[in-house]
Image (cartoon, rainbow, N blue to C red; front, side):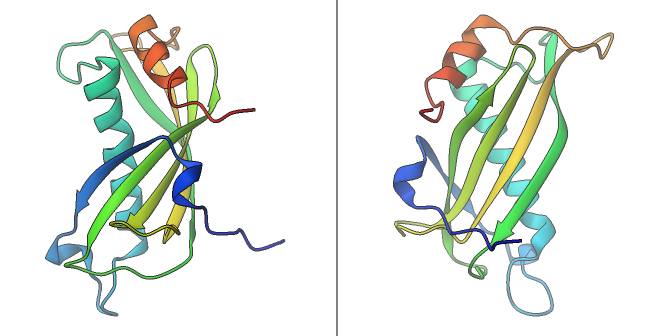
Length: 146
C-alpha cells in the first residue's frame, strides 16, 4: 500500500483552534494517537453546532460515528497550538464523510489527517434520517470540489 501524502492547508475549507492539554502527551512525549480521534470529533461537532445548527442537548437529530481512520505525518506535543481543518469529502442523504486534518497553528502541511463518517439518526429511534436542511447547507458549503 502506498503511503499517504500529508495534505496542505489549501485542501481544507474551515479551521478552528485546538488547545492541547498536558494529558494529551503520552510517555513518549508526544500526543498519543487516540487523542487525534478526540480532536476529529471536536472539530466536526464544533462545525455542526456553530454553522449547521446542531442541538446536541435537545435536537431530534444526532450524528453517530460509524467509521474513522487516521494517517500520521509528524508528531505534535503539549503545549503546541494546533488547528483542526475540516472539509466534506462525501455528502449523502443521511450520512457525511469528513476530511479532517490537524495542523500546527499556521503550518502549511498537516501533521495528521483522517476521515470520519457521521450517520444522522432520529434521537429516539436511532434510525437514519435525512440530514436536516440547515445542516446540509452548512456541510455543502465546505464540500470538496469533485
